[in-house]
Length: 200
Image 1 (cartoon, helix red, strand yellow):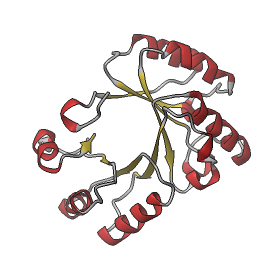
Image 2 (cartoon, one colour; image 1 turned 135 degrees about the horizontal axis):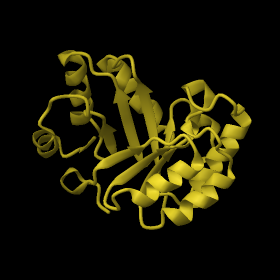
Image 3 (cartoon, helix red, strand yellow; image 1 turned 180 degrees about the vertical axis):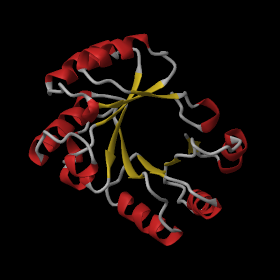
Image 4 (cartoon, one colour; image 1 turned 60 degrees about the vertical axis):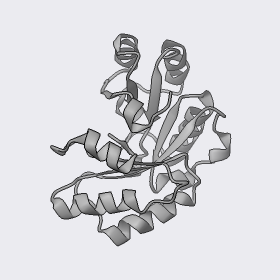
């Protein structure tokens, strides 16, 4: 499916505490929605969960993330085990796999499935970096050759918003850039038509 702004599906975040609860949510979710699964929030997660999710989600579009312990994810998993799980996730064939900075540098991205798109994400729930720092972060992202660069930050004022819009406008043609504007009272259609970007 083409994820240009005009035809992008609605993003639905699935918040499940157990693997069985997640499987139920996937089955009942709108098949036209892009489903974001946070595997690190599942308390009984094991790698076997992945083999159960894939067949259940055959007719669903999934974006899978599994945040590392240092990024606020699973506290009971070691860094080495996290890397092993992530390399399994990218090899299974999910539509999108989101990997946060800087943990992406710990993963062998050559193991990804041919049909999987890698999203390198910078997330900060407290603030939006200044424009120069946003550009530096974007430059670091390019070094990993991701399919999509994603910024998910807290926008507290007009300066933050302007800095993110400047980032969108100044991007290279080869960049596929997503910016999270979901908490703002903004007319997204106007923004989408104006900048031709993927806006959540």
